[in-house]
Length: 540
Ligand code: GLY
Ligand code: MN
Ligand code: MN
Image 1 (cartoon, rainbow, N blue to C red):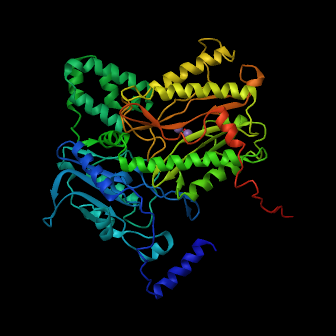
Image 2 (cartoon, rainbow, N blue to C red; image 1 turned 180 degrees about the horizontal axis):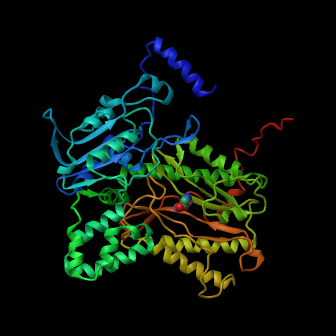
Image 3 (cartoon, helix red, strand yellow; image 1 turned 120 degrees about the horizontal axis):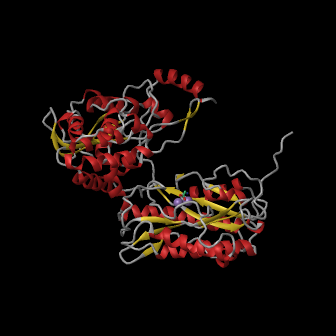
């Protein structure tokens, strides 16, 4: 039945009946991040704040898929990391020092949580409500999100106000405490204008606070920045400062800029520092997500048959994810055979038969928020051809070099430099490129952090124990490339998730076979799906 019709009917019914309270103690998984983790991270966050500062973090928006169907809700990872709260239309305010409210209560954090609403909960699921959120999430102060509108928080009184980047993708709904309204109310209370541009704001404040001796170098630096950020070119203050020809006129421009306590960088910079280093509680979930994804690769290796479709292969991976209780995929699954493997973020997965080609499979289970990012490339027919094997082994050697370079203290670029050197050298040896030639066969980076996001935030500084990065070199040779045809449509990526340790690293995804021999051996094994056949339903 269509939801809208059913909903109208049920709302009418519900008006006549009093709805039973939902049972609160049904059996749920017990291995989520513990409340104490989120509390500890909030504390760590507050300790990194400037004195007399406030930070505001919002839940993710609900996004519409079509008509009255929304996309499955996914919480904003920063908000989840700091609260453990999974519901939309909410926000948390963190203070660097305890505040005393009008009622005399003292708190250094306030969560504005969704109100309970039995009718809505019947349709869209249980809500904690402010009272239960306060106890279960152990947050000092929790209020109904509707209370933010009247909350007397004087943002002007703080040295710094930290907040996220806002995007124009939040819908207003009839509820006047929805995310749209929370953001609008916050912007109004904190004095963030409609056309606020974080980059422009940072440059204005730099101009205001820089000593006159450094005006010239600042002007040159800003001029460089405007080349890559055309929106800065139209800003009258920036233009006047860059084009001014005397210290005096620059002084006047600087003096015309009012001071501001708005700091749009503080929140994201602090989250980068915190989220780069995984705590033991996080690593437990991340290891599980990675192991689940490896089992997905193994089961597909065993089950693969040349007549399978890309989508069917995707389905086997995702069935394994669900079987282990992984709620989502951390990103849209990529299963690309032959040429499709050359499309880096190929997600259509609609080729009917993978026969004859290498199949590149880049999939990550998301388990209780943490996502893996694992790629294996295997031959549809169970055996690598000579050409496929040669390219595969170059990528494998590049990956080994990248993993070896993933050492504490090394730069974040070190794995890429090591992997790229191998690929350049070996492609030249095969005559696919000339020695020293620039080429597009390895067009992406080798490493990114992985965690709550597949492309997790981090500082990009020297590798640190406790961070998890991918090492994922690849070679992609699409049809019509300027090399011998025998290489065309070979695409290989091998991607593992590497924990940096005190003494080196640990490959968290080592469970999934990686060498030609190990893959061929696994593919020769029987699968529980060998006899799985479905009836023909080709309707007339
Ligand atoms: N799966 C996306 C990536 O490898 O970065
Ligand atoms: Mn990746
Ligand atoms: Mn990937």
